[in-house]
Length: 300
Ligand SMILES: [Fe+2]
Image 1 (cartoon, rainbow, N blue to C red):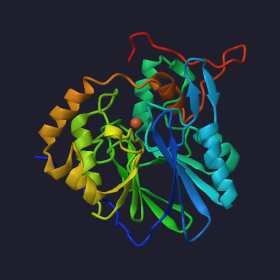
Image 2 (cartoon, rainbow, N blue to C red):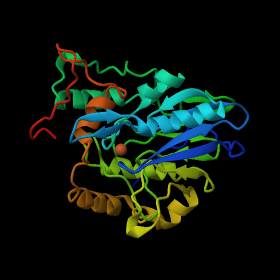
Image 3 (cartoon, rainbow, N blue to C red):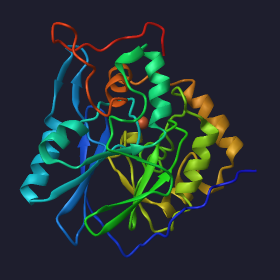
Image 4 (spheres, helix red, strand yellow):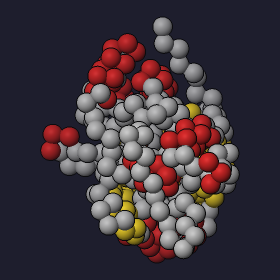
């Protein structure tokens, strides 16, 4: 019997945020600028820092596009949000924050993720695991504001232990819980991930009002279709290839675990985790001032 925690806030579908998507072709990530139509206030959700693993080269073209858009519109950045600790791309949150301000927020279970990966990378005392790299840690049902809009957080673990869906009026940013209906769901096999927990989190997202707009964090254009990122609760409930049409928990878990057993690790998981568990910052420089990332041999 699957028990789904109720939505711990009232959804106000009359609030309709303006949403500007930015697609990163290297990581198939969609970053969002979310703006309050009643003010100039905005937030950035899930930004990307460009990293060329082969050369170790870091750059900021993706984030610069977002910054340029916000500046051109004359918007005020209030929040820089991470839906979770991404394993497939590096976050540009601190880079954006340095230029435009705003507060950096993530789910409060980040401490669990930091503990797990602090051990994986043997960080010892080089790395605090108390979430202090972020300005705000959200619990389930917390709220914050973007201008006149209230954002509510929904705890949706499973892909990782710290995922949060952010619900803003009629829009919900689902992070890596769901993909588009023809893409299914996110993997649940990273350290701390769990398919059963993910199923319950997805059901929770799908208990939002049917007309809620859902915005994906990733899309891979399955079967050759164009990249897409927006759908609705109603569409996902009816058509999602992993959970649509009332797929039960055991069926989902068996499918998810079988599928996860076939997936290679994301190309950028090792640099991504080391940077993103620090809120998008690089590790402390070495004694000669250069910065290094570590590769744990047979450690993942
Ligand atoms: Fe992810």
